[in-house]
Length: 161
Image 1 (cartoon, rainbow, N blue to C red):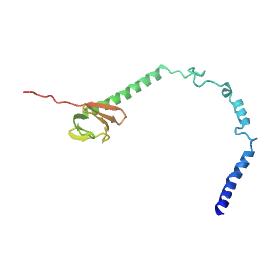
Image 2 (image 1 turned 180 degrees about the horizontal axis):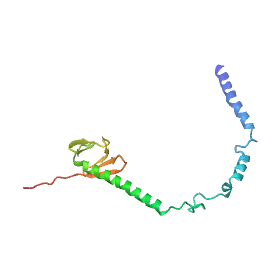
Image 3 (image 1 turned 90 degrees about the vertical axis):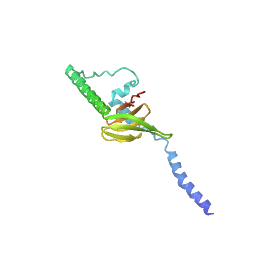
Image 4 (image 1 turned 180 degrees about the vertical axis):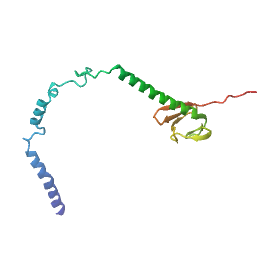
């Protein structure tokens, strides 16, 4: 008896609102009066231009004069020069001299300044960057300016007597 009463109440609570909402079919979901007003305001909206076409818009792009172009080129050269200097500094600071490999991972042996360190993938070296990849041939470092720097293994010459 209680279960039937509960089911009846639940059905009434959920079915009555659905019945009332189903009655309002004359109200559209999109207000056409606002859409028409928007079309009248914005003439480009009514043109229907193709946003996927390769044609540029009719608006002219601002022309750059020679001095602006030269300044941009100089700034680009300076930034590239700084990046190359940082990369060269990292290459001179770090020497990849060996590695130790096991079944699970590979450890790299580097010389940082005058200090020897054993590093693994994911380790962060102060003021230089993060060890991204270690292979028997090279070590890959993601520098602070998000540039990949590859440092090859420095092999010692073998002397055969």
